[in-house]
Length: 636
Image (cartoon, rainbow, N blue to C red; front, side, top):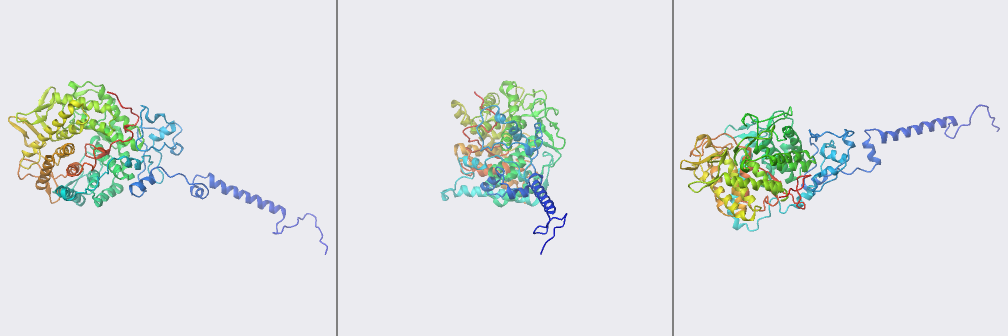
């Protein structure tokens, strides 16, 4: 059969398509393929498709490590990590995703040059100061928790006691203190959970005005105590509250000092004990909220910070509202160095280094540090000196900064021993009855009294005796014991065997309060704190005996049906209660009592220093270098 070719027609293909149709089809197909691959690699929200073709990114540093080492699941509900207020992004780096990741640090790296991390590239430096937005709710993490724990010289909770029979009495005493802690916590949980403190008589909560709207002071103050006593269920309750209910979205006026030592100190120690990211995150975020307090001409912070406006102010009672208080601005160093260590944000360390710089330049009357300083002019406002209230923890933080640095912070060491020599020369007295005490100094005139707060000094002097000049070590050990004995006498000479808020040495009366307004006891820890330190330094059984007397007195006079309460008059055999279970009762008093009846390797003083709220912070064991980033040790 002949096939006739018709002009103008193109033979069909085997698929029934003629050549022009095939061309159009292939053109359409190629365009479709191009469109798909463009969407896959170029569109901004194609990350899920990219995982099918691209190699997975390296996991964010530290997140898996926390889960693996600390035994806690990754925290997926963390609050975003805000940019620190004082730092601004460098030009061209507004988008955090464009910033280079900082090098991963292992524990506390050695830093010997004053520039610290400034030798890094601009992008890396900015990234260490202005944190990038977190991925999937997690906070950037560069602290090597596993390496930190491996450097501790003792197990945190000590080694098991192999000789149980010979230590049965001490174990029973320790168990009693543990039961008191459980009772205090359960009472708080039942009647005031989430409030700052418990009111045990009325069985409700108390908020107060010191914390700027922050809540849960007792929860955060109790975390490391519950951990220490291995109260696992109670610790998990406290941790869950922090994760689910502790908010920083508050707008009140807060005490820089109290928020730092209670909240930041408690959160930092909880992180170092567990590796749980929520504690680190909250501590850093709260630290950033305190930074406006430093906005003064000298950099000496004011005592009050407004969380809403970012403004600051001084206490009205602090010499007409114009002064900062030595014990307040002098008790930031430990916590702020750790905030820098865990955040990479140098601003925290820089703030407290500047405080030291200002103080070093100032003239000190007879080598003494007055309690009030103007943050505007940088001059002393009054010549009132006390190692008790208003001055106390400034001296404590000097010797503890030296110890926490791995004994490299020579500036702190020198300042401490210089101050102690001046105190010994001008304030130290012995009463006619043979009691050693540290008086208060007002422009050259002595007030022959000690406050309960000053009774921490026996422990402090004992702690620092080992690093004093060799010819003074025995003298300081003896002095520590004598001061602690005096503070014990203030307890022994009361009807309740608990000590007053202040006691005097005059008119033939020694180690007793002069008036009712000084006769109260609010569950303070300073005396048992010194017992604990003196026990660890000497192992003299008298300190455990005195500590047990305090336990019995607390049980008899301060325990109520709804918790523990302070009392209004230690010289009354039937004292009235003040209806407050202070948060520091769980943070400090019960902790120090428990440690007094524990072995020396439980929270070993080789590994830990306690902040002034008794929250343990780790000693730096990295090659003897200082945890103060960017600071070289200062010479003698």
